[in-house]
Length: 143
Image (cartoon, rainbow, N blue to C red; front, top):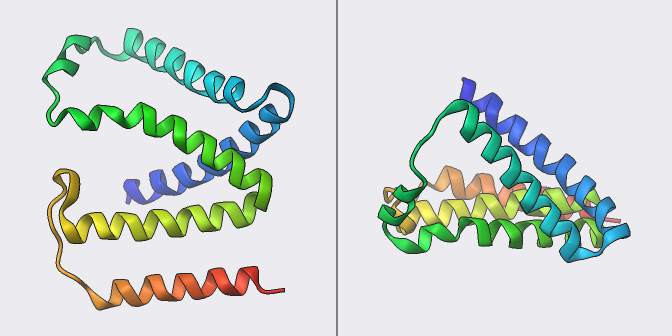
């Protein structure tokens, strides 16, 4: 049950962060804002590392496959796309489309067993659930 609440908190934080970052971008520009997001996240992680644990940074060299180390690069891309989508669509529409995209891509990753995730069988109830979510997007966009 704790995972459920953490996921809800994650979604809430992502929405608030997207709005904050979009506002910062209006004054500073995209790359200053994105850089600030990544730098402030690094600073917080550094403080947490100093307080909570001292895992060796050198263990990063042992991570396999190496491409999974691109999470930070992807994070910069996420920050950019969230800012641009919220700027052009508004927070509610952008968040809705972001969540639907996350759901679909995550399910494809599970179905194909990509990136070291255990392969899962196709479940029609999940496909139907995503179809209903897409219908919800259409209703949300309907004028």
